[in-house]
Image (cartoon, rainbow, N blue to C red; front, side, top):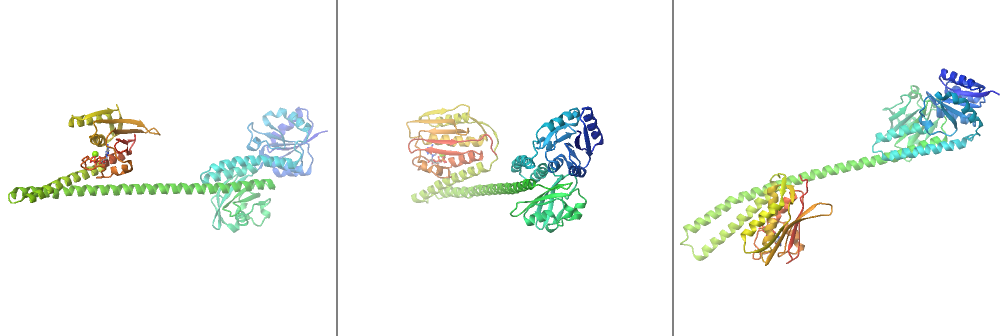
Length: 543
Ligand SMILES: Nc1ncnc2c1ncn2[C@@H]1O[C@H](COP(=O)(O)OP(=O)(O)OP(=O)(O)O)[C@@H](O)[C@H]1O
Ligand SMILES: [Mg+2]
């Protein structure tokens, strides 16, 4: 008995090729060739076939649609795909159930054997429900990978690109649109289709099907758009669309819709609609995540800008304050010089007439003038270290320490002192400013050990957790109460009396400003009578 074969193929040469091939392979058959989707469907409806051969896709009618039509109308008939290329198309890659075999046209000589093999196999996928459910599972798997990609999307463009592609991959539709709600309008923001749709256009919500889906918060499937009054037919006449499914994005309060379109009349299965709705729901979550992310990013940028602005304003205010105190200190010098000058004149010209007490008063004025002069000089030096530019160069702290120690030893050769200085401690910084730090820390160590029989002073380095270098000056002197450690760095703030140890209380304030200007930190640790340790860092990079 002759085999009845239905052959869906739009290329007449390929039809001939199949006929010849099967003849030569000794297969007696009666081939009914059709070249369009409608002819194919009507042949399926009118006749009984033993085998169906299908091209992998005709323009406007793809392999998936052919397979679905075959299973609906002739369940159990082997469906063999003949593909033009050795490369499988996306639908073939997932090997939908119900395809008995797939053969490249270049391997036509095996077609007879493939057909016989397919006929001998039990009707594997004759149960349409089983096929549908297997297809649904495949669709769900695909959806999971789409959702994964959506979760990484950081902007709306990426979301739209993923979704428009996914709509077609998941349903085999010929087109997809991504519609956004803009108040009372639908904005067709994006599309992916075999022919142009409405990208970039806006329609009133009440005048298009995406609006209907959004207003009714439900998906709508239309097999024949020209038979449905909700469709604005004029807008569709220029397009390929015959059937569609429109699904709202975020059912509770739709913010848009996703459309799938077919060039041939297509009856969307409940599984297809469910898949599209799941895709639309995932899209809504992705859009919300994009909104959140964009919001967060904007807030971080705004906050950073605000912080930068504040820092710049603070920096400016500090510099103005510094410049002000510099000019005040500077201007105080001349009246002070005048006061001192007139005091000397008075002393000279009235030396005879002044009694002991008056001379004592003048002497006190002299001491106060000297003290004030010293204070002014200190204020000026504080301002200078804050305002002067920083010159960057390698600074050998070890040799600076050695030089300072040598000078100190010279000043008091009678004192017993033990100096330990680590070698080759080199940093990047301003040589003059860093010398001020070293001079003050070592001079303090020298001064506050003056009551020790034998002073021990060390300049060294250690590594902090995180890898930064900590330089330190340690002594075995008078020490101080650690609770007041912060106070030491304030200008003119002292923990010892003049009688105990003389000084004005400016050295540490100066040192801290220098270290801060290098981006580092200066801190102190001590116990009364147990010596003190002053530590500082100098980062490799500073502004
Ligand atoms: N090595 C140290 N041991 C104990 N106390 C110290 C030490 N270094 C500083 N101090 C305490 O910190 C205070 C502030 O130190 P700072 O160097 O600023 O001022 P100063 O030494 O008193 O005067 P000068 O302005 O001449 O340096 C000191 O008065 C002293 O009380
Ligand atoms: Mg000092």
